[in-house]
Image (tube, rainbow, N blue to C red; front, side, top):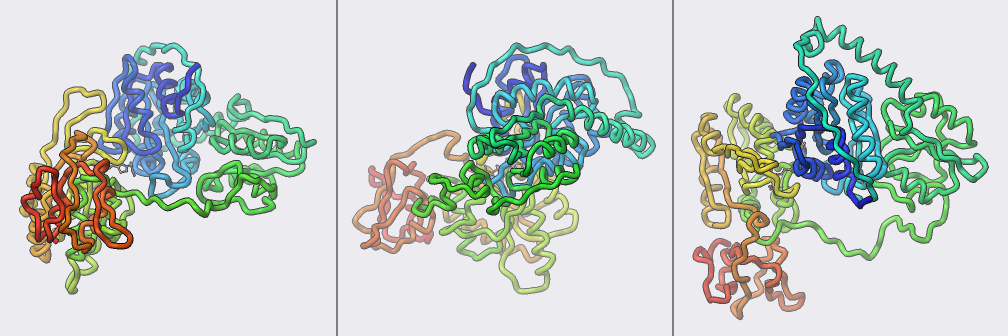
Length: 591
Ligand SMILES: Cc1ncc(C[n+]2csc(CCOP(=O)(O)OP(=O)(O)O)c2C)c(N)n1
């Protein structure tokens, strides 16, 4: 018995079931699953450029007879949706399990969509563990089920299940030889003539799955002690909160959330006076329970429709006083996230703010460039959207006097989906400026490898793509590579690129490693007696820099400063220096 997070447990469940191939694109809260799987004996695991690619690679390996694990966060399922929907037509070869890790409460996501809807829409059965032991056993058994029903199985977790450590009993690996591959176009070539009969296979499989769900051991009724007054239908992490909030209520815990066992649900409803559905940031289960012909009772107080639930919130919804329940903690200071000290992204945003560009942003650490004091981002929607949305801005603003339009995208995000957006812009003779912030890693999700740094998940031999070569090959002539810690170089590059942009497309690659990659520190800078309290160093938003509330004099925290020298370049008074007395050589005048 050992403590393990849900993510680690899913990886071990797949390993015990003999999965030999792992394919993923990182994304919180799913990332550690593939990182754990890749360290286990006898498996091959890789980061793919995006989730669609991952599911397709996985489906190919499954068709060839291997058991496969594919993992992604909830928004990754959007990207993978195309192969996902047709995979329930083709079915599988070797068992295939896909983790969709949801983020109710949006701790690190742009939305809090509920992956249950995907399972239902794509006709892919979904299992919903509520702790790590279930995460392991559901995943392990999902492989047999996948092969039995000839369809991928989805495991749905949420941030609470993925990241909470609970006890797990590990088992042995069951080696699974490849299932023999035989060409079968009627199963795998989804052109209309073959897809039509496979659609019927899908629908009759749905019927079989519905019958199976009624007897599935993952769906269980836990009797209440309140004399049959209240019954609650729930799943996943919410089950734990319900048990804590309502220890007396009867509970129908659904471990299989698509398809739901309609008869079991209505029998359960019959056994209690009032039937409630408690779920997080969604009305999926409520809709499904109602579709089973069951009346769902309203809560005495409203249960939040968005965000993560807690035992306190559930108690409140049921009209129970809970001394630990605080609708909103009043006196907790706000601690907005910020780019790290020494982050190579910082000066790009400082300079974009300065030229008052319209900045279409993207998803990564650099999204923090939207926040004060950098405040240099107008949009951020989904991965790759910076490049396509800037093209949209240029189309709409064409022929008008307008501020420069600049897309900002990270290296991993560029490989994920920015590249196809850029090809579309080039093809349509689009204009504007694209900044690729190449910090040599996928920093936001924990520094995974990507095609532009050539690091692979299991450190196998790889190829590092030549980013400048790729851009040149697309026919983009105005391409610059710039060192982003040099304020004057950043400024000059943006000036050159945006000046030309009325009639051409320009790309600037800002290339310097993420500070967390090498963890290299130079001696910390300090503020000397020259400080005039102008505050320009604090406009960089570096967490190491603060100002005295009364005098306005700046101070640098030596424990946080890594000696990057960015701030010294913005001090017009030589007030920021290193212990050896050197100011940055491009100091003075960047501001
Ligand atoms: C479709 C999708 N998949 C995964 C994620 C999780 N995610 C957010 S940003 C990011 C990559 C960021 O890397 P990069 O573009 O190199 O920027 P950096 O964080 O290094 O600055 C990932 C994987 C997501 N938000 N959406």
